Length: 53
Image (spheres, rainbow, N blue to C red):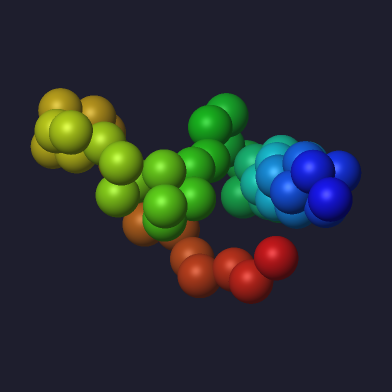
């Protein structure tokens, strides 16, 4: 059962990595990662697009 959980994280990570190439950025984070930031204004973050992976 734990393999399914790992597989979901691996698939999401691979999708985000592919999107970095598509958008030409070096780092791309998900909405859930953004929501975990304690001080988002500290970083130079911009919304690129909404993608379903």
